[in-house]
Length: 461
Image 1 (tube, rainbow, N blue to C red):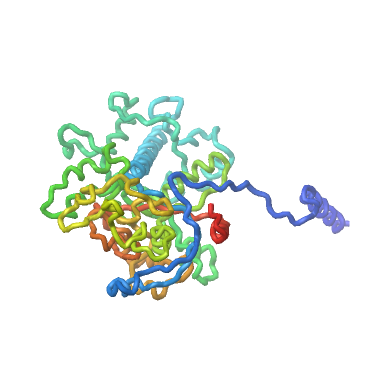
Image 2 (cartoon, rainbow, N blue to C red; image 1 turned 90 degrees about the horizontal axis):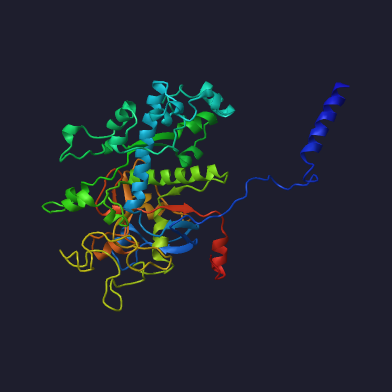
């Protein structure tokens, strides 16, 4: 009798579950996916191309021998990341640190939004009666028990921060804000200056490739072993404008280039490879927070392009071009230079630019990408190895060795000669090194393959 009752209960459960699909295999229904082209990006249709140097470049071909490879479709920033865009990242990190400090001091002194002042910046779960069941569970079981006592707590981003000292609401607020600035003994001309060493971005990464190759039986250990917590200072190193050039007066660029509105649309420099990767991670988190608020699918991650992707995009569909515009010359038919570089020895201004130019300058290539040659060289997410072309895959090729601190930079810059502007020329810099002539742009994977198939029939989207 008990077996019959159990069988009846199971059958009733199954009937109730498939009542909407008539017992057919219709697949799991989830959120509807709405493809969306990221703002400021262009779609690079996937395909194959011949990567590397031509045979007549006897030196370069040893470093980059020709090889036919295929890359998948992806989105790429039309321009290099600008000062204005990178400042959005810096300001977000700065504001988040201030809000966290205010929430912690509110927690320590038992301040709540009802108290006004600093209490308005209390953790959003400060009042237990206002917690959701999930927040209550996390509060009881996780929050306050990890390495970071406040990890997982939600800061209040709704209340506007106050930067005018005359409007500080209370002494708690003044105490927190004081920790963000350099001491008066290190200030000059009465200027209060943010201590940029405090602007640290914390995030986690996972080495999926290494984890996938791990054959250990303990899956829990295998996953946690490859999750790493990262923390680094993210403010650009503005001193590069002085340190990169001996016996040269570049103090105005050091003083004004990153923060002044006049340079908003110029490419950010002084950012090392690790900071560029951190920016891409933040951009993903920032967008996904917006997606979550609207109950939408998370987006594919923003990241630095791999070396094969960068060269494919730089070529703009021109199979054997020397430069993004084809080539082999750096002048157009009117005698104007096609990019921002150093065309003559000691003459940086022959191309109408002394340092960098606005990110959307000169003519874009056929993929609508600006300054893939010149202006600033660009970090890519590949490690430099002179022999990497010999052993890298022919599908989505990249070689990225975490132990190899030499990272590839591509495209040449405002201070380079024309050779470094060629789409096949490779160069490198160390991952923790910032330069006044290296910037970056990001990419995002395209979801699907139809853009490649359509391209084959002349109907690429």
